[in-house]
Image (cartoon, rainbow, N blue to C red; front, side, top):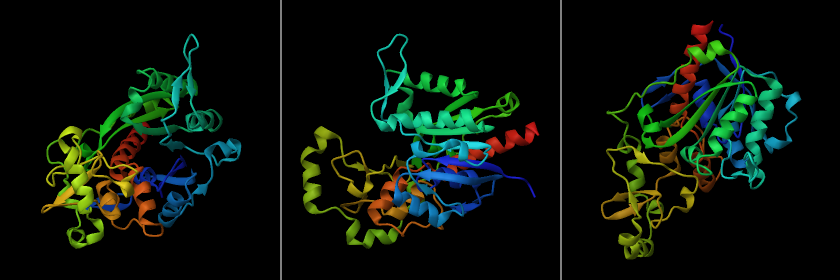
Length: 326
């Protein structure tokens, strides 16, 4: 039996990134086979995301702040993964400028760096929003890369659009992969797009039954409010069924017709997506358990997640690089 690489997962959320790493799931009729990775430690500070995670993974998520980890007590790991919060980076006024933080969330990136320095895993994978590339007038991202390099890693990164990797969603995310061994760095290549033309579409994951459930439709008052300002605000983002969906977010429970949130037009009525539709838009399999928390909590967890299918393709590329190196 192939020995699996051990993973520590920081900011694991409901587990989209982790599911992609371990594989072994079916999505839209395609089997994403198991990969030689095993989660040995996972942590997130959201108890509701953690509940969903623990309903779906054999390794149980620790509900705590990552800053409270005693890094030395962590199990030995081969891979550290995490989508660190990025809202709070700032560039301080010192000369030369340094990477700082505006509040506690900005410190969390450094927890990954600290863990890399202490545990020295063979690889790490970090995920973040496209905006990280331009944060602080483009100054933050190079400094983040420099911190990873100072921890002892050679870095490759790429901006991905999930719709090009069998996900029915136009979700753009930056993926950073770090390598402790030069041979791994030299062997690794990011996966090439699979669905540049024949993209998976929203129509393929919509639940027609939801079109007959009143709870998912917006009130007449909400529609009237949107119509009054529609020309000025360019809102009411109606989705085209034969294209990938626009990016879904963590606040879908409070989705508004006056926002940039994607909505459906059914006949002449507007409706929101169901939590399960959101999960399918994100490429979670139907077998992924969601219903142990409220619908509002499901929306938040799914909206913040990494699409498992996108991550599976990245993890599979890493697996191929290891096989070449070995």
